[in-house]
Image (cartoon, rainbow, N blue to C red):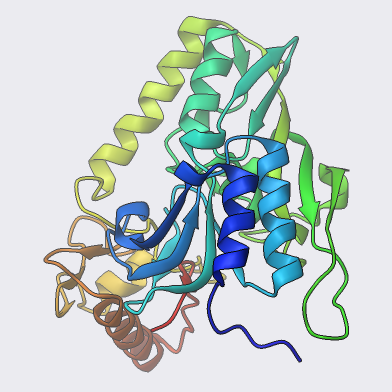
Length: 319
């Protein structure tokens, strides 16, 4: 069984050839790449700028037995204080082209949903308005079927191009992966879940099928959704968005508020008084602070209302 220890100089050299030496950074603090502003260093951060470079980086790590974490906008992540071992492949502005053809918009994985929605509005295409304020990349949105205001990514998604990891080899490493395109019907997308998540697929690009609309009305709807977010959500504070999934028959924020936990703190982590469904980084919070507060919230809501709260925030790295 192959066990990862550290990335060798030889592997770093190959990764430099794959993505460009300037796109390989050692011991990069992940706090700079998450909306929580929390997280220790990655062993190595890669910022590939083309599909070919992404695939080469993923294949190189697979063949070398180097664990890979793919990060987009870091808007739904809590990275451990000890950081992330192995390679972090960052897909953001380095891999974020958007194109429009007819009523379809194609976007690379690192494009922000916001920018995709703006490009659609420019082309007088409707369908992305409820999603445009979600601070996710296309890759992240497809991975978790991001949604808001009774709409979700799957509603407007036509297909997704993914990197499918190769088979596991006898020594515990993996072979080269394959690039495939799946229609949305084959992605098993549900509430904050998808086949992409379940099978460890890596989103390379996505195509959205939209409807013709009136640009003025599209932008008015987008402004309306943004105003609702600004009024109800603590957008001025670092956070990972909604901390918990919506429990059946309840709203997480209301349960937390009714439990008397508005403003509750562990270290620098705090339950937002503006929206109790958000845990925010109020004062240099650590991942340990956030985890402690999440556990306290879960215990109190369970004790008072016998409801289990499941975190929506994904924990990655070493805690």
